[in-house]
Amino acid sequence: MGALPNREDSWNLLCEWTLSEALRKHALGVEAALRAMARAAGADEELYGQTGLLHDFDYERYPQIPDHPVKGAAVLRELGYPEEMVLAILGHAEHTETPRETHLAKSLFACDELTGFLFACAYVQPDRRIASVKPESAKKKLKDKSFARGVSREDILKGCEELGVDLLDHIRFVKGALEASPLGL
Image 1 (cartoon, helix red, strand yellow):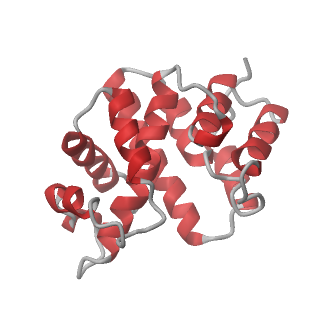
Image 2 (tube, one colour):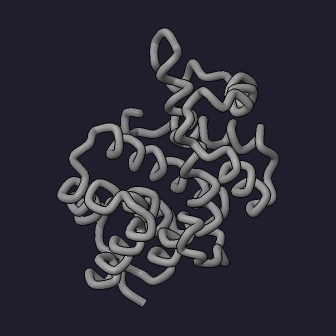
């Protein structure tokens, strides 16, 4: 198993491969959600956080199935990132058919799409802030297929099921993580 590089190295890798500010913000959001998941589970916050940070780092270069996240996983292995991280990143994409066996893998899958959805909910608020998103309203918006069309509702629901958490509770948890993040989300 590889050693976890420091966060600065992971941030630099993300920035080298990802120029889009929106995609970087998404990565920071998933990082914040996964750090909160780690704290709640008594798990390794750095491992969880950096997994969230890097889960889509290859997306701009390789956005097509089956390339993303397979090509990025190969890079992470080459750079010596821990296999648990690599498997979690592979598992966040259903087409890889990588089983989500660890809490880290299940957490990434459960937080990824929901983070993007909550950012979309914030974007339509007058102040565009996560703090203004009401969890009950976000849950209701999930039923509106025309809102944030790129977000997989199925993945959000399946992620909650795999983690064994209630959807509204999970929305509240992830929203709280984003709101409390020192990353300026």
